[in-house]
Length: 458
Image (cartoon, rainbow, N blue to C red; front, side, top):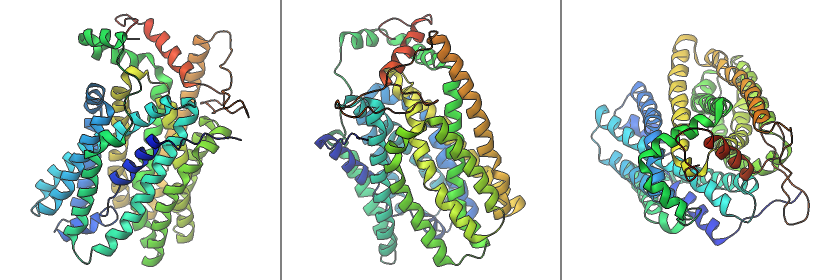
């Protein structure tokens, strides 16, 4: 089957930005640095919770900010904030209050960076010669792979430089991320389209912008909201489990070198797995990917509670690979239903729920570890992917009802054909081929049925 190969200069610059913005030499040893500065393990956990709470609380206003200034300018600002925080950690006094403030600011920078990157990737896909449904997973998977590969290499370099100087590690990271911020307007693609008369009408009706955004959000339906919650719970399961897996493996008597090799494999799989996303998404629907991934995660967490180190290693490696592909599929399903005029704001809402789920999961996993021990806590934590699985089933039912209401004749969009060669299609939520244009047209049709939204705004 043929696949699009976007190798334009524009995409090369996009991947260069991904590399610069992820040159984070401190990423693999930042916990050691915080302990070195005199903070306790509990205080480090509090800082991690703070950063995700900050991302969560700032995601919605950040979304409005992205809509106002543009995703490219916002991405540059986010990188500059992260750069300042990294260098600030070197200059900061060993005070928990000061570090809490830095991590709070860091969360805002990350919220701007992550949300604007997602908007940029979707807009770049929309501008490509391929349909967005085909181009987005390719761009997203390669962007993720470049980012993960850069982080992996940066972690190794950071580990080698650490004996020389902690300051050198953080300053180099700060300079690289700052450079990405300065060059953002050069490296990142511009908006999807030039201003039109309709855009001017929208600007003139600025007093209705916020209302129309929330109307758009409501019009997207309960199935979209549940899909977002499922994605949030998936991230909420993976992130704390992969972080705490180091402690779980240690309590299961795995030697430190074996744990280090396992963690290195986690980052390697994190770089390679996203590259499979376009191929996998052509063969399997989002429903198949999400349901199978959540089931495997739930079973894996239960197996981890058995206390067998070798089994846990396998579970950790699976958790570092398959969900990466599923996350890209869910991201596309979520983004493809968002009207383009409000993509920044609604992406901010999505970021809010995902970050809130991760922050809450950190606290829950930590509390379970205190109550049941490292291994047993994983088994209890399996309730999270099980809950996501149930919600996803409900989301599919609501989605079918919504689709039947919008398309009473039961006809679906035709498969997308590329280059006049082999017919290709990206599987939708339930397995049907669906184009992004068709989805947005239906979304706009629903918007027009809501009072207070003009044709220009819809």
